Image (cartoon, rainbow, N blue to C red):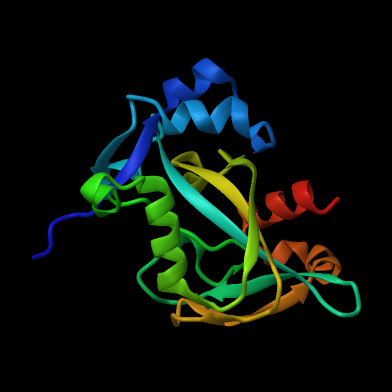
Length: 202
């Protein structure tokens, strides 16, 4: 039997010492740098963390943006399928790619957060385009059980070309969709995607 995955978490109390986050928080420097450099970061068993809101699991949430020749801004969008991921999110559309940072991502002195983000991307998609990356903000949605235990970090990759392919059955119906179309059908998206689009594409 494989040993249980240990994932990167931060105590909620450390976040609250900086300030409260509800929905989207754009002040990245105020929150993210102290959190990622905190001596309170630790790797804990995933099973226990999924039901313990006193810890927040740090989750990179990468939006892949591409502007077509018609000038319309588009985001890579997919439907969460039936694989091994977060069962509570299935069948919702999403514009965010990412997942947990695992203890293995800290091997050999690596930066576990950056290593884990790129590992998750490589597992879920084939990204053939060059891109510019910015960190746009943090996401916290305590309105549901999934949201209460996760803190999302929203990264925007602005791609030079739409060269993205899904690797996993988990990412079904992957493709670029215009932001205005996503907004018009916003209820089909998972909550984090709704919040991120609302914050970044006013």
